[in-house]
Image 1: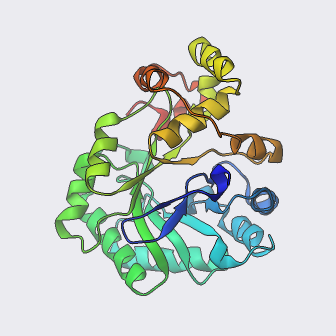
Image 2 (image 1 turned 45 degrees about the horizontal axis):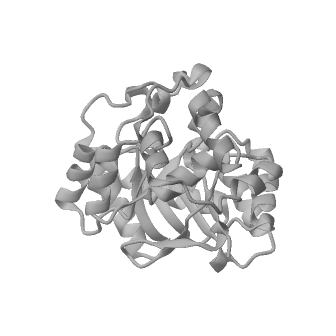
Image 3 (image 1 turned 45 degrees about the vertical axis):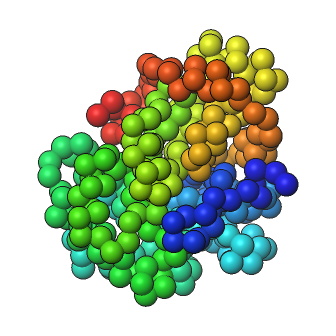
Length: 285
């Protein structure tokens, strides 16, 4: 048993592998090769999004990886700009068509606001509309589990007002240096599983001397330490890479971080995302 064989069970009863492959920034024409490589290494959880523009390549990789569909867990995300029931329904079908699949295992609302107004205006009604579309697609068997991404507590409370399904997942920016402990506790209380994207802080953490020293103590790389940290928080970890060597080493996390060291990592602050600060999720909003 490696981490690639371990799963969590979502509130709806669907099993989700604890370690997945993120595909942000992997171009559509490179995505099939990356996904095939990951599946051949043993990954069963593949995460994409309409906004990534690579659903076609990801789907091709899944279909040609030589593993039965029901052994794979495929996630995608509704574009953050879609805050309307009919548009959302159409976009869900659009994702299935691009992926070339008759169902996905998880679909999320990518953000509570459109990216150009991230953490800005009030889209409460639009999020409820998009959520209703996800619920209906879930009921129709097109999606096995449904959730959200980048949702704060008040965004979740808004959805819960009229929901017939509590979100199964909230995918968040979680890494050593950015641990939203209050939100993690709130989600746990509602049985909403958190998925950690950018567990290696989009690479920003690699230069942190304290983290380097801790990784050395455990005899692991900084990425391995960071991935293990998010797993020990009880989240699904979604490191992004197109490099098969990195995929392999990212899955070699069979060690235990001590409670004291977990506290140190949890209390880390101040990560400079450098050039990536231009992206809304790294902008500090």
